[in-house]
Length: 411
Image (cartoon, rainbow, N blue to C red; front, top):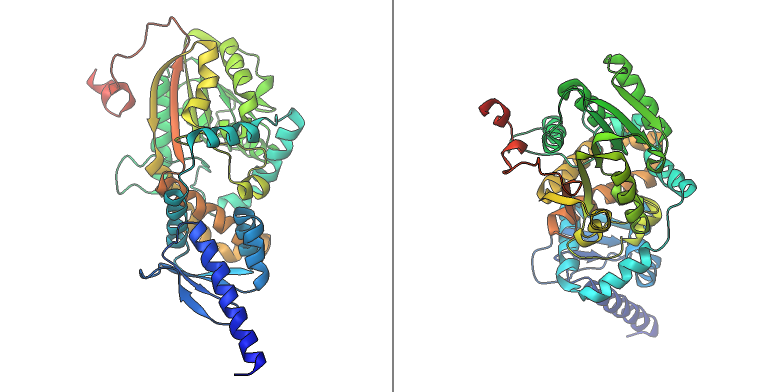
């Protein structure tokens, strides 16, 4: 055997050893690995759900340096490729990591606290919103439902389509708030306006909705005018911290994740100022089963300034203001399915997305959508809806019947 041959074999052995160590650190997922030289091997004896290809040795060092950011950036740039069902790969990797890394509760809580101490100022919040939500309405139209709802759908029947499930979610939120005609509603973080318009059109309320995204607010105003609802719905391009009106109901769907843990108490104080003593509120947020820091690749490339709270962290919105928490529901499986459907829609339009941006953007968003679905599927992520009212309001439901269709008719 020549010196050159021994050198090549030694390199291959070293490469395999390093990658096996990386795979062990993420729980030995049921995948195969292909190296840049064509060498391929299984991580475990189980049948692989997909093949992860390292197209350059550089990708190995990036994963060693920072597993999450390294993988995300290498996949986006094409230094790592996935062969097979991408969502199945994401589900397998996420489940393996969740099972393997049984982090201690106290250590995770400390990491979450240190990560969340940085406050989102008004200027930083506007920048963070612009980074994600002002990518262009035409981009989101390609893969969201017809109402442009960019939060968890509610599949009240197994056969429901995404459009049907999003309408069901809007109604689910409205019923929980027990909306009555003529009431004043404040919505913090309104997206493209679907919930505000739905509340006004189907429940007869007057809505003032706040949002930092210029493109989303412009689109929402156009829809309000087109549907002749602009006399009942006002879309304000401003931060939630600027809210000063009084209301019968306060609702926030998908905004708390962007507020930042350091601002939770001040958000609660704001809600207490604006919500009438007999009013009801609902906060809908992605969450966790225990405190932990948000994935570093997500905060760097997708949601800068974001923090995904545990239920105990969410309580810092409600407890200091002595709100009565009336109901907590976890819609985790619904969000796993929602994200999987978004991914399917996104893949069908991937060529158009590449024309609008580039291939690296497509790969980044594919990873984000698949990883999100996998997070909910594995239980790494949760989806909480919390209903609350000011302390002392005794005009509250005795059962949960009011939350479901048909109850009003039955009464």
